[in-house]
Image (cartoon, rainbow over all chains, first blue to last red; front, side, top):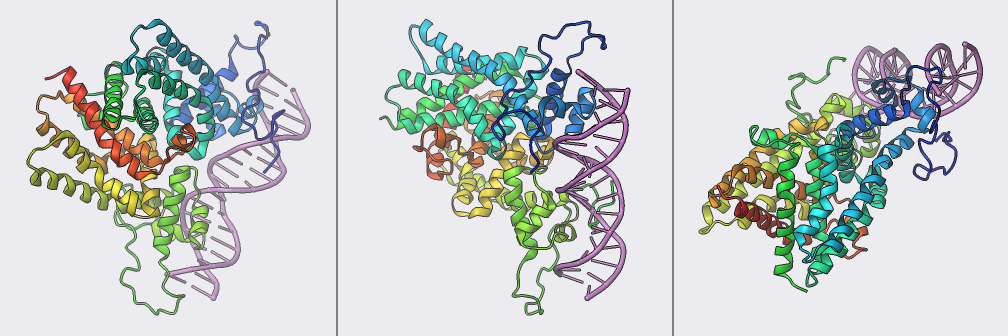
Length: 242
Length: 242
DNA sequence: GTCTATAACTGGATAGAC
DNA sequence: GTCTATCCAGTTATAGAC
């Protein structure tokens, strides 16, 4: 394997991606201030979310971004580094939102419920899904893919999202003290599955329902996900209390 | 695109895969009766289920199968045809099992329930997951991947699995006539998600629970999936009856 | 900062020898 | 039926010109 061009870290994931050109002055002579790094990340995000890591070439990314074929390499190093940069860019944002959402729910609500906890867990994602624009939609779809292909980025995925899930588990344990740990974990597993497949927007439900339901219908998901998941979880704890 | 080598059908999916060498006589001079086509399909199944379609090369498949690099092409035509052959091989088997399972449940049970219907829907899959051997495990993991990447085989996936899901919906409609269609479809969407992520065996729940739960624990899934899903679905219909 | 050119290699697929 | 040899398009990545 050839030596990576990027500065530090070696095989570690994305040491410090996309740090070039920050705060550079406008009117630098080039054509009206285009953000090429952002364009590359956006293009990569869209393509990876459709075809996965191996299904995309760096050249396709460059072409979709409208930049020269060598620029993705220049800005982000190897293809793998580019992928990590894509994953990281929004992970931190959304993680902070979700932790805050749950902390706020816990501190500001008198009677904590399972459904309420799950809403606090889901809502930031549903919010960016609905109002965050196409970039966020693609990012969430990408997560759905990685979530089902551990060989690709499962370890990284876990590193970024486990803290959020652990916070949820902690919260649920407080709300339902009689729940067994196994049921807590398996419920979170099921919940993660429904959430991520919803983001995948596969179009399957459209075909299945002959157009009655639409894959990207955020409102439809929002109005069902918490109720469905809470009921499922509570049923498990009801059957085998601690 | 170069013309496919395989006989009929053209772009149609795998018209008649793996039809060579059936019933050929033993003692044909070659080394003790090895099933090369089967070995290729097995190897492809395993690799595709780990890395997806684009993450695998035909040469890797050949090497894993212990055959020469050109044989996958010889037996199955293009890489895409090989993939379709892998998908098809077990689809028909498991589809028949599931349709039979649900038909039997419907005809042999006095009081139909949501949970019972779901069990009939799940059980054949859980059964092959548990007792079918490593090939079936890999196949189910492959389905989990494709389920989340429509660009790859979503249309094919739908073609093979929609009939089974439609049968389930039909059954559930009979059991819970007051359920709204939207809730039926969304519930099936959620159910498909939990089922497929369970098969993915990502190891996520292992890390999350610090070893308390294991990804491949069929019994753990079996004892929770129907109860969880039935409760979730019923909760939705309870909230908005037809 | 951006692009040209190219190195060095791997991909799928096949023709034809055995 | 199987393998050798090969085609050649396309891949990542980089060195160096502008």
